[in-house]
Length: 331
Image (cartoon, rainbow, N blue to C red; front, side, top):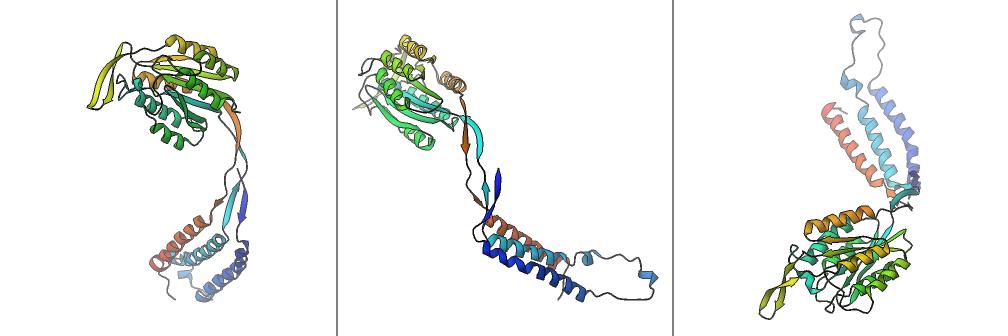
């Protein structure tokens, strides 16, 4: 709510003292130019109507006076100030824990599992404008790609650069979950959530996945787990010295483990076998994670001087059009 108007250079407003003198001058000039005529009796012109040019004869002068006033006020640099606003927004800290092991290059998703997950995650992030969201990647080890932040442009840039091969081979689900928990455990947010995406079985790492789940539960962090991969076999493109070679791999996902992690922390396990189902899963999580908090926000002062100067120029052009084209005043 706007609380008032302030001026950066209020001393320019002193020039408004000249306004009454301009009003007096306009009226006096009109009286002198269009003097009254006394007559005894002219019945033939008694009911004569004034022409529209006569009725509008003072309009250009009044418009020019408005231009003068607007320019004086614009020079004083008026600024609108706004009071404190309270509004309800989402208050959730979210960490996306993304498997980047080589098997995520499998092409049962288009173009592959990793790129499909990144694309859906991007849309999810764009819809959560007020949440702090971070990114943890894991393979044979885990790494914080981006700590939770509201600067989603930075997050999206780092997400787009995420690829396989930067970490040791393997699937360390426990490490990925533990690092994610560590990123949000001290958050003051009303709700803390981890979305863990993997296509494999935990086969390495320093932290047991079940221990990481208990760690998350201790800090009240909900974990949604998503297993990505078609049922059966999938084709994967493998770089070799002689070019890209395609191999067939089994879609082996430890669904029992992922279900237990989700159940232990109050989350939910999902299985995605194609691009569309992965998108639907993220949409469901988006609906589930809606915690409303009340926050205060402030709006910076807006300088309206330029707006006043703009309208002064518009009015001046309109005044010239009326004076020299419409009415055709002659001096």
